[in-house]
Image (cartoon, rainbow, N blue to C red; front, side):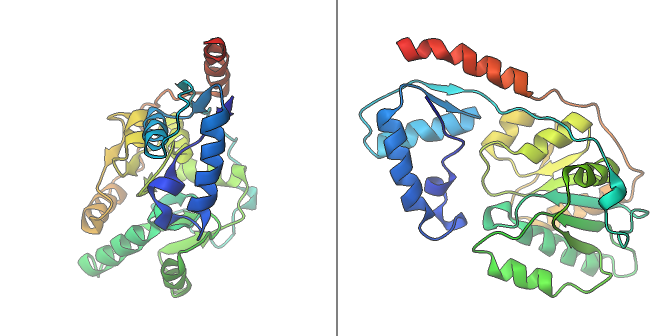
Length: 262
């Protein structure tokens, strides 16, 4: 039995480290040819696994069972937040490794649009939370050019409690990803009732349905307009959405075990 999270390295090799697609293909072939049961974390991923199994002419067709991963919320703890952060003004968060598929460039473009559209008004803040990843040199360079004291702040090294503290006080979670297998920040925000702006990826819509507000990944002006409108209103919370937890995940895994005897 093997769990395959997603097929992003084969679906989008342009978003991964150089050579990662070849390594992933080799590992996938071993798993697909040898496993008696394949688990994955979303129906969207299951469909991609089945498609790539056909493309790569894998003759074995082990059952593919969806077992969504669980969400466990950390307790907010603001003690380790940088003292320089201004939490008195509206802010949004983007959570995840700074890598190409997370599409941070769109958010940088959106804030540039807001600055041009509202030159005499204070802009909402954007806290980009996550370490720097790979193959994203242009975005890294743009982040390095950000002025000190500006509305966009890059944060890395925060523990789970500090991230939770920011999430609880933000005006919304922004997730303009170009590809996802699941989207853990989406689940965390939904469980806390925090407004979400996200791209309409199959896995995201599978997880959140109509609960989130979806915007296309190549429309920075739409993101800018929506973000600015939200920031002009008092901080809002919406009814929390039920998402899978870890007991549910392992019940799904246990329920899949009879497939091993088929």
